[in-house]
Image (tube, rainbow, N blue to C red; front, side, top):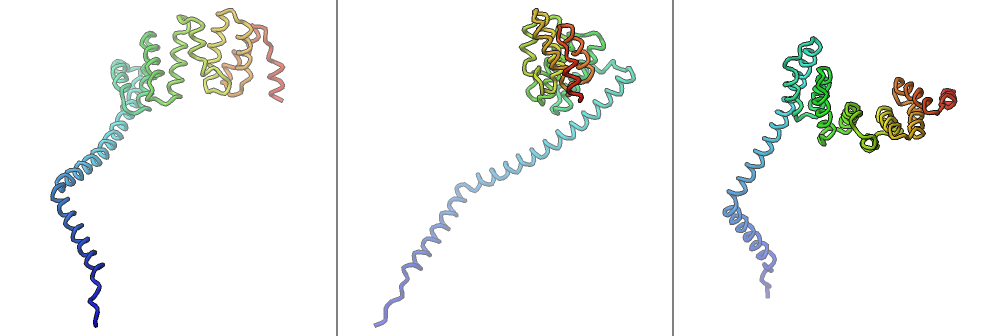
Length: 232
């Protein structure tokens, strides 16, 4: 007697496929409009981001050109509008433009005898967490140099401690001011040793090293023998 065909597996697959198709249709019926809206929002956000980045780049390029024009005007002693324009560029979203404008604004203030503005501008740059660390360190050095006579020696030492170490890019300038602060505290021996360390460091600019050699000698530290041995 012939056996009926085994349709169990086939039937189950057909039912499963129909069920999934019905579920998918119901899902799009219930949530299709939300999905379309989400896709539209995603595309709009992506397009907006691309446009914003392009706009920012275009704006930064314009600010670079504006800054270059300002420098040209300053070179021609035409600085009447420079402070205002530099203050505006100091708020730029471009880190390079912002830092350059802040340094130029501070230097212009120094030329004009406005030490208060120069100091405040360097301080703002030093505290700007959005700027690369080299810019901030340079600003801190300039700020401290302007404030040096008004600061307590211990404040100078504490402020410059991270930079006044051999191997640091600003060791020469930071170390020199730190040594001078130590001398103000009556710590001549420590000051002389720090000046000697600066004089021995070949990465420090020669002008600072020459000055450090003389100052080390004034505190009784003779480094000529050490320098001679380094040169050989």
